[in-house]
Length: 127
Ligand SMILES: [Zn+2]
Image 1: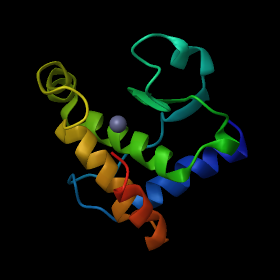
Image 2: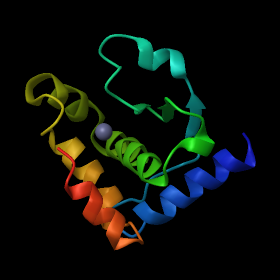
Image 3: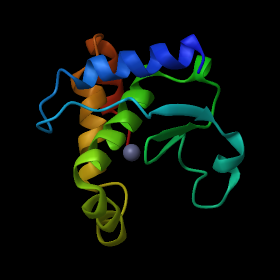
Image 4: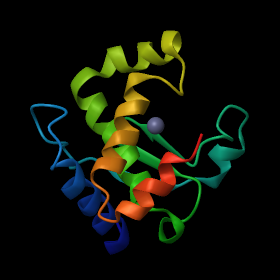
């Protein structure tokens, strides 16, 4: 694990630790970030810039070009999966992606912990 990867995970955990979505804080012992551009060329994945798979965070761009907000978002999914793994995956089957409560919560995690409020304002205008 590179220092950059370790620092990115630590920064995201520090932000999530300010939230009380779940009783236990996110466990980052097994969390890794991998740059997997090939994944995001596969139909069904093209619309994503990051993807969480268990303790793994897969990113489309190199970590140096990836925002902390995206890491917070994906680490929030890791956190969710540590608390309600089965329900989470099933929910995507019947609730879809955009308005899925897990997506809403992960977007909120990034928004609520952002230090620059102007960035938060900009993201609200996105669809
Ligand atoms: Zn998400």
